[in-house]
Length: 250
Image 1 (tube, helix red, strand yellow):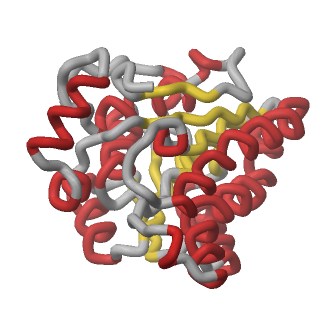
Image 2: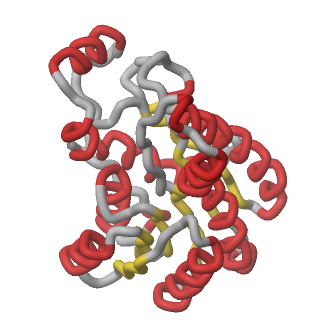
């Protein structure tokens, strides 16, 4: 897949949460290929260390559980110290475990929000000093089309992901005067290995192809390409936007 080269990304420090596998891994690889320095946060230490070793210079991995906000803040500080001021943040970390309404307890509901929403705000808060000192930056939040379509039941995940759109618009309004842009990418069903292993089957794929305008599987690189654009100066006039990458499903 051909990738556009964005000169404004070269030498920038990017932070990607949930960057060790799936969509996050593709985002990390793509920024690294642009000449950016990339900090990677992920719960999977083995995968994160392997990615950093494979990509080599300019990639710094921090083992981190984004549900632990003080640990998240500390990991972000270490990335900044190792690679320089963070001016691009990609809030990618999430987990789309399925659940029915009768399975949800108050503790489970709060844990799902901690996994899929809360850390996006606190990561943005943590990189703010770096972006202010640098004179601006770009924050890319990751949403999901799951709350827009009728599919499997997982209300906590869908609710958290819908809230990412509101968070994006709120942060964009507050941070715009500081020359910090905030946008939201809303992926459709992206065929990561996790999705293929857990949920893809002939019936679900046939239904997806019926509903998508683009009749092919969407892959992590499709999302990474759009994240690069919103991280670059080519999108400098764009903020508070939610951009669908779903092959025309919704």
